[in-house]
Amino acid sequence: MNLRRPATLALTCASALLGLALTGCGSTGSAASASAPASTSTPAAVTAGEDANRTTVKVAVGTTVTVELHSTYWSPAASSAPEVLAPTGSPSPTASPAASPSPSCRPGGGCGTVATSFTARTPGTAHLTASRTVCGEALLCAPGQRTYDLTVDVTG
Image (cartoon, rainbow, N blue to C red; front, side, top):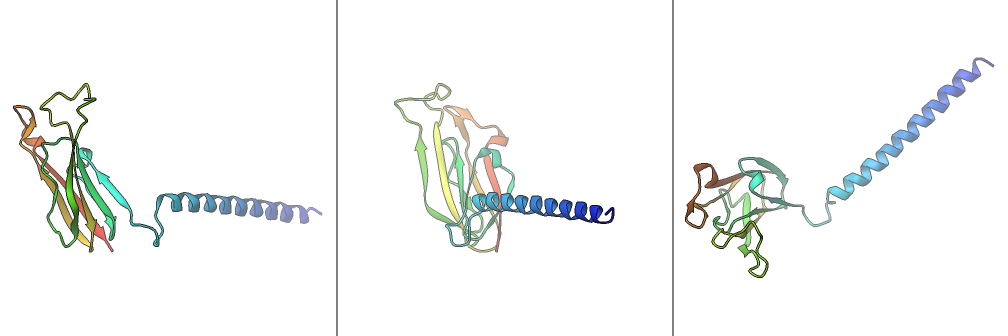
């Protein structure tokens, strides 16, 4: 009887561990499919703002990358390698609504956004760059605020 008891205990533990492992796999699979698009769905989209300046993002072919900068004084972003990251449509500057201006946004402050979208066409690396010289009405930008550069690595 003593020999059967450890075997039963070992079998019970193994079954419990297998059940937990399968439960964990099921949970991970559900979360992964919710955040990662399936190959038959529309490609992923990435939006980058000022916080992504001087950083690198990695995307797959087919991904739409949008640079959205929060001032209408920015130039539309441009791609250093249009064969890798091709512009999609026209840049879209959007001024903040005149009827309800933000308390922190004064007239002449460049309130609004400039968004430019690109499609990842082929594997490679491209820089998405934009520039500005003015950071507000009659306010020149400091040297560190004049340029935007996002490196995009496109994988196959």
